[in-house]
Length: 146
Image (cartoon, rainbow, N blue to C red; front, side, top):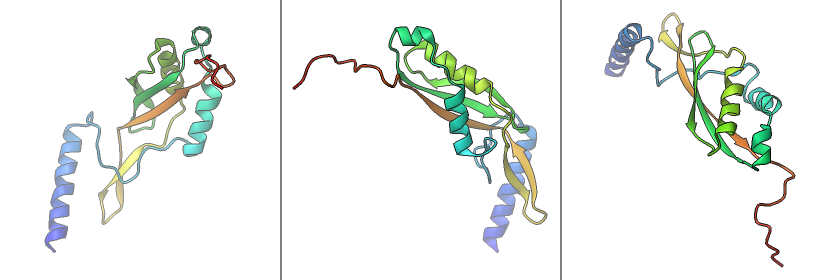
């Protein structure tokens, strides 16, 4: 019985905090945001949408850009930013461009009333790593090791 009272108190406090601070990104969700079609569809979107920038090709730039963005309570992607740079600003800009062009997601949600099953959608931070690799290119170390 104490456990349920404690959980009810936590839920009540969470509702008060969420109502007062709607801009805050709720860290605990019952369901995370979901790209339409799921993870595999997100990977397909990324691979189809990313165009290796010509400047990066000329410089043989490769790396991993980690992009963070907010999926708002309606499912729109906003506040896209580089969380960890690939080391090349052109690659980072391409990663941001692709994330900004994403379609609407299914927003994260949490149950606010377990008796009725009432849910509330949430703003949630999402992180996506994007690897840039020039496949088919010659290795950077051109020394002949036999």
